[in-house]
Length: 371
Ligand SMILES: NC(=O)C1=CN([C@@H]2O[C@H](COP(=O)(O)OP(=O)(O)OC[C@H]3O[C@@H](n4cnc5c(N)ncnc54)[C@H](O)[C@@H]3O)[C@@H](O)[C@H]2O)C=CC1
Ligand SMILES: CC(=O)C(=O)O
Image (spheres, rainbow, N blue to C red):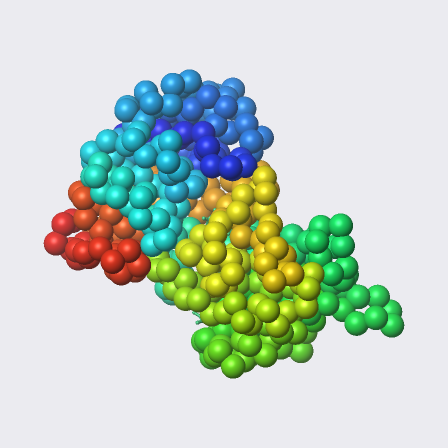
C-alpha cells in the first residue's frame, strides 16, 4: 500500500502522524511510505531519519495526497486540506466530526473512508488511540492552569501548592476518565486540593481506591457541579461521550459564581466542550480569553505543544492498527477487528458513527450494511 504522511498545518501543531520507527515498520512490511518534506521536524525527526528507513520524501503536498491510498495524520483536516482527498482514500487520524459539519460534508462528498482514532475501541471498552493524548492533555491541563492563575497572565495570583500557613488552591475536574485521572495525578503532586466529579459510580470508586484521601470524589449532577464550580480556582472540563458532542454541564450562571481570576481549561473542547462559556476553540498562538472575569483556555490540540513526547506516544498506539490497515486493506482489517471498525465514522458518502450523525442531525447508516 502507498501511505502518505503530510505535514500538519493546524495552528502550532508540531506533531506528525508517524515516527521514523513507524515508517521503518511499514516499509519493512513491503509498503511505500511518502513523507511530506519537513513533516517530522517539529517533533525532532529530520527527513534524513525517515529516508534511512526507506521512506520517500515529497515536497508537493498535493502529489502526496494524490498518490497515497492511506493518509496517516494527527489532527482533523483543516479547511485548506478539504479538497486534497480522493474517493476511496483511507484517512486515519483524529477526526472529532460531531462538532464539525463542514469537514464532515467534505469527507462525505469525496467518499473518503474516515477512520477516527478517538472512536476505535480496544479491550475492556477502552479508547486506545485517544488515551495517550488524553494522558498528555490531562497532565498539561494542570500545568497550563497553574500558569494562567499567575497574576501577569490574568489570573487571581494563586499558587496551587499553597505555602506553609496559606491553603493550597482548589482544582475541580469534571470527568474522571483518562484526562481527568492524569490531571488529578499532577494536581495532587503539586499539592493542590483536588475534587473529581464523574457520573460513573464505578469510576469514582476506582479513583477513590487509587488516590485515597488525596482527592475528593463527587457524583455528577447539576447541583453538585454548581457547588464545586463556585469553589474552584482551576476548573478542568474532561467529560466524554465517545464520538458524540460533549454534554454541556457547566452553565454561564455557574461560571459567574467563580471568583475573578479563576481559570477554566476545557480539554473536551475538541468534541464541543462541556462549559457553556467555552464557546469556541482557541489556539496555541492565542490560547485564552476572559469571560465574567474568569480566564478560559480551550485549545483543541493541547498535545501539539509537547510534540516530541506526543508524537512518540501517538505512534506507539497507532502503529499496530496502521500495520493491520496496510497489510490487510481497511475492509478485511475492520472485519477482523470490530474495535477497529468502530473507528469508521464516514465511508462511501455515509455517516456510520451514530454519535456523529446525531450530533450533526444527518442520516446514520449501519456500517454492517456497507462493509
Ligand atoms: N483538547 C485537547 O487537546 C485534547 C482533548 N481530549 C479530549 O478530552 C476529553 C476526555 O477524554 P478522555 O478522558 O480520554 O475520555 P474518557 O472516556 O477516558 O473519560 C471521560 C469521562 O467522562 C465521564 N462522563 C461522561 N459524561 C459525564 C457527565 N455527564 N458528568 C460527569 N462525567 C461524565 C465518563 O464517565 C468518563 O469517566 C475528550 O473529548 C477528548 O477528545 C483529549 C486529548 C487532547
Ligand atoms: C485528541 C486530540 O484531538 C489531540 O490530541 O489533538
